[in-house]
Length: 89
Image (tube, rainbow, N blue to C red; front, side, top):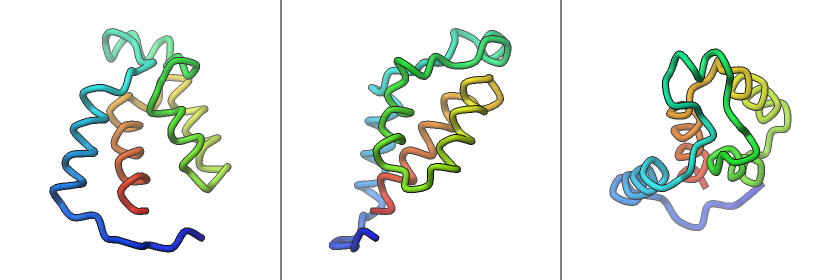
């Protein structure tokens, strides 16, 4: 288990949230309807790629892969999950 050497304060968490939401390329579709129909392209989605390296639970990652790839989970939800994973270190 990774030891916590420092606590992330609210300002740092907000900075991480802003950077991911603005600049992390998404594999999602142009509209919610299209995304629900076609699902996400996991090969180009940066947030999902980061989760592959940062998430310790393979079962959780596989669940995200299925839900996001099929369109059940939206891009914003994946980005929010990444922020939570990155800021809990």
